[in-house]
Amino acid sequence: EAGVVQSPRYKIIEKKQPVAFWCNPISGHNTLYWYLQNLGQGPELLIRYENEEAVDDSQLPKDRFSAERLKGVDSTLKIQPAELGDSAVYLCASSLGGASNTGELFFGEGSRLTVL
Amino acid sequence: DAKTTQPTSMDCAEGRAANLPCNHSTISGNEYVYWYRQIHSQGPQYIIHGLKNNETNEMASLIITEDRKSSTLILPHATLRDTAVYYCIVSSIQGAQKLVFGQGTRLTINP
Picture (tube, rainbow over the protein chains, first blue to last red):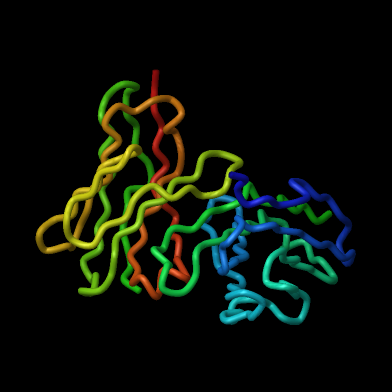
């Protein structure tokens, strides 16, 4: 069974440019997460979806970050415009939702963003 | 969610058991102990979780003290591929939808 798929793996952009990351979760997983990981730190939650609804976006910087999960499957995370401080790894994870939730999250390999 | 304290780094010889401690003295009755690990350039990987009983799976064993204020993750026969950052997280099942990762323990397995 395929795991969580993310693309691109690596992205280098100039500051003020837009960037988008894509995530395809494990089939049947209703819950999808986007995490941010700075160098040497643990991942930090940006947003969590239950199906197509964003149920926790309190940590998402809404002035420049946006996310969507149309049809409750794939998701896209966008940054516009990017700043130097956005250089990090963006991780997507999925899990069974609702009553099936055990706290076991499945992570993708991440998208490493470098802003010059 | 309760906060955890882990050593910043540890070393272990290949083939020996790696014992990773975690303190969670403020854990609540409905909170589980989760362990994840992150190998370099990969996303975190779930290892094991438990409430109060010791747990074992194909990857590791989790030993939780009777008062639940601390736990130990045991990798019984560490290999070089176990070199990673290990995160101990305490959360309720409901709160597990928003796992809060600390800085973890960087475990290095030496040949």
